[in-house]
Image (cartoon, rainbow, N blue to C red):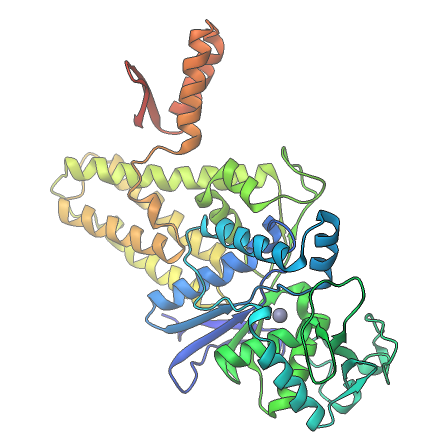
Length: 464
Ligand SMILES: [Zn+2]
């Protein structure tokens, strides 16, 4: 068995153990979305990875506090609000609500806290004041900038050297081109602003996460996560702000998920953006979860119909195994199948070892499918497993799937929406005397492991 959960740390470039804080809690902060439009599939990856990581750690007996912010003050929000002709605060509120509604459909529960920037202005302003007191920041022309050359560890996370960096953020009043904004003075075309000791304006992007992470998790919490694209400058700047102000490490482990690669062949996409809600409508949450988790979080994940179809096939394999176990339990044998008993032990060990080792979900899935193959073999032989063994195997498979957020595959006798739709389309095809189409749809429904019957109340779909 393993020594406990470990994750790859971008800062040390090593896989390191997760150490709970003095309160015994594993604190995890993940940078959340900027809410200026509907969430796309790419932004769902950190949500899924860190929600399932929390679920796994909790199931393993750890206390976990997961925090993920919503960025509701941002240039992109002002721009989108102007384009839609609405107030920027109203736009951010609306897309914040839609983000919650869309990610709720993944059925992974909410993070323990989802702080908003607009609700943390006092903490943000207080943090900026501490940085000014420590001479790590200065006010200039209504803006406040972080003084990068006063923080020698700057560049440690991203592996960059200050003298090699190129400034990305223009600012008229900067003393050094790499200094970055903590506070920006109010511009004439910005319809939302806040009062501060430096006049009206709004926080820069990076400072919000330093302030909200400290407010919710304190210093030196266990894991700071987010997409790989946030390492520089966002996370580099968070470290400079938090550690500059407190003199303590911000987080122990910096965990970054790779990006979802768009541009693969997709039947329904708007430009290069695929919305999470569209993907959920088409494939359902089980498929989206399996698709996301069967690739390691530190590997690129190409988004394509073929990849999603593969995931759908795997979901079906798991459902079929659960159905086969239910059928077998209705008519058990009297054998204890040694090979199956062994497979259960092997699967549990391999599963836990994989997830403890840098949250290796593809290896965890491989362990589950190994167990499914053993189940299918055991149910094919003449001497059927006895009732006790079937119950134990069913419970074990359910537990492993539950740790991945997929326990629902076990107790499914609910007919998926898309199959009900096919059954209604088949009815319509028959009414239109298009029997070829009706037969095609019936074959699709049966191929998914269901049968369709005609009743006076319309079609009825049941598991085969
Ligand atoms: Zn952040």
